[in-house]
Image 1 (spheres, rainbow, N blue to C red):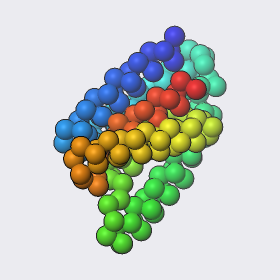
Image 2 (cartoon, rainbow, N blue to C red):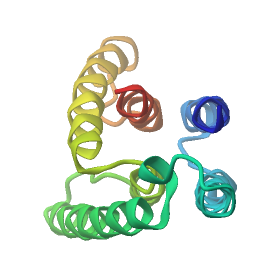
Image 3 (tube, rainbow, N blue to C red):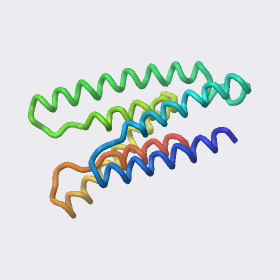
Image 4 (cartoon, rainbow, N blue to C red):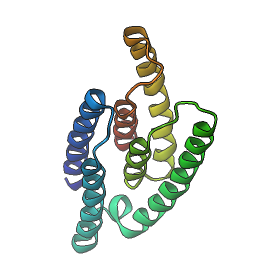
Length: 153
């Protein structure tokens, strides 16, 4: 039950973030904070109630936090390298959104999220290029799809 509620709340937050990113090309810090606070609340609930510790417990939180930190460092490094070459890198809001999503996932789900996000991002880029002829596009919808696919798996 706890995981169903968490999924619905995460889906609603990601829908809001996606719509906001499409409209403004920005990812609100409030959304990233809400995902983080929800993850902390799930950690507290699982510890207090002794429920679903394998999904939301302290061990899962520490491992997913470590995976989030490593992936965040790699994304920041790649954004820095691309920025030095005057390419359009992934935005800072996208990186923060990735990091907050990673806190919910185990290592297998993390790789699934990256794969699903990449596929959704390629499709989004192709559609956006076809309609707007703009090489940049809002990436939050692709992140949302990847995150929700990984949560379901």
